[in-house]
Image (cartoon, rainbow, N blue to C red):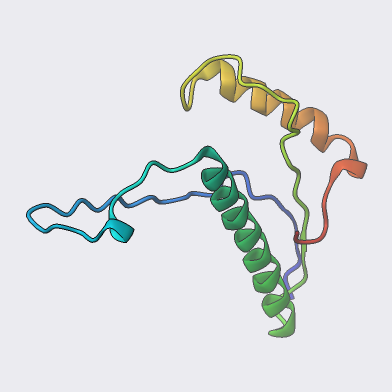
Amino acid sequence: MRTLTNIAIACIAIACIAITVSAVALPACAQRRPVQPESELLAERASTTIALRHLYSMAEVNQLRGDGDIEVRWMAIPDSWKAPTEGIFQEATMRSLSDLGMKIGADPASWQTEAL
């Protein structure tokens, strides 16, 4: 029997699809409106929560099938962290996140062991 431990999810991809309808007049209730930042934050948090719950379910199914035990641990980036540079996948930002992950990960008290 295999034993898998310390699975960490580093990235959760969120796909956004924009649909533009032309040549058809949409009713007022269906016309495009700007997305509020609060809505984006809520969608991102909901997506993360669902992904974590899915990961825990997959670990439980793996154990029930007898394929081994999986211990899921995860950490969150603190709200106080700010990106050193603007833009996505900037070297300085990625290095800052890596350093933060090493610092937080070294402290087992910071590990989360339950889904939100």
